Length: 165
Image (spheres, rainbow, N blue to C red):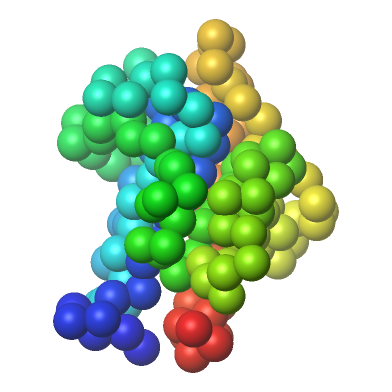
């Protein structure tokens, strides 16, 4: 596995970094810690600039709090072509985010870009995490369930992904 001196860096990425990717960041970080996977650093970002510097959406914060997770430390950031090289793995919430990330990465060998729901061993491949922005609590609950299932699959694959770095 990675070490503190050379961590494996993962960024969870959606459009605005206030709904889906912050949920994914908090959930994955909790799972990584629970599994004792030292040397894995998890963050999140959005492909767009609209919410940079702001908190996560109240719906995202509420669903995380319902599951006993702390949403208060999030500050929205933007993923840019200059930043992609900081990461080993970019995890997209939907196909549009994935296409944007692949364009930013270009011909570089890393980071690897994957679609989050492709990592859910019990899920349907090639599916997006729906954007709950502007919707009600049920949309955020759906996102949480999909993210949690896929993040569990990602944690199971982390040793393989780190080894392939």
